[in-house]
Image (tube, rainbow, N blue to C red):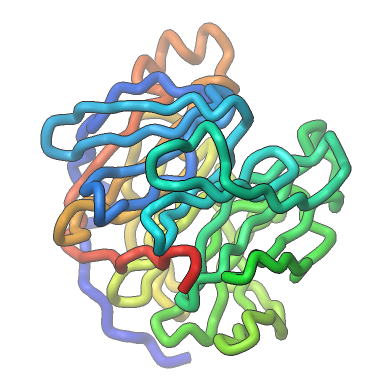
Amino acid sequence: MTKLPVTNLPVTNMAVDILLDAHAGTAEGPVWDERRQQLVWTDIPGESIHFTDLSSGKDASVDVGTRVGCVVPRTNGGFAMGACQEFLLCGPDDLSHPEERVHITDESLVRVNDGKCDPAGRFFAGTAANDGRWGTGALYRLGADHSLELVLAGVTCANGLGWSLDSRTFYYVDTPTYRIDAFDFDPERGSLSNRRVFARIEGGGRPDGLCIDSEGCLWVAIWLGWEVRRYAPDGRLLTQVKVPTALVSSCAFAGPDLDILCITSASSYLMKGEKATQPHAGAIFACSPGVRGLPPAQFGG
């Protein structure tokens, strides 16, 4: 396999700062909102969406009233969210009262977890069982016309997802499998085929949320692993960024130049003694890795 040229980054001595000591239950789904010039993220058990300014660290939140797993900007200035058993489409000024709801499932024990838009503006989001049952979740695709399609069944805990620079490869995480999978992706139809293992997670921890940088490399949060890992497009492990808490949930590039890697984490699954030794669990961390990210696709094209 040909090794692709990528920037040589430090392995473990990259400085990670606390952007916001949020003490979130489970901070997830970070995405850079270019219009607002803010990092947008969700707190799933907190049933809220947060807007964080990178320069000041100032944070504002909106109570959505339901468990929100992911949020993406819309081309009309609003946001689309994956929450409980439905997609919520909201205007720019009122996230608490959706303009439209697209129902996914009638199974009350399944909720929407992670999600992102593909380069064409279709919203992909997957579900997970609240009681941990295997194979009861799925991956869905919401089109710009608000049509909904099932694209992958038999999922246990849908998590990180992203696309290669040429939009021909789709990367996907089902967390309990301890691996990142790759699919062939049809950019015109938004369909998946030819599933294979891209990388296996070894050495402790499970893969969670991910993002893609401008060199086509994957940055993957390692839940219970105290780190974020960077993988080359050919699957080589390149970099491990250590984080001072175990439950690392996701990551995204942010800032006007998309050169700041923001990392989310969780506190709600830690025991009391673990919280005492991890005082910054649930914080939003940030570092400058020396590469840039990609502008996030917006829902609607």
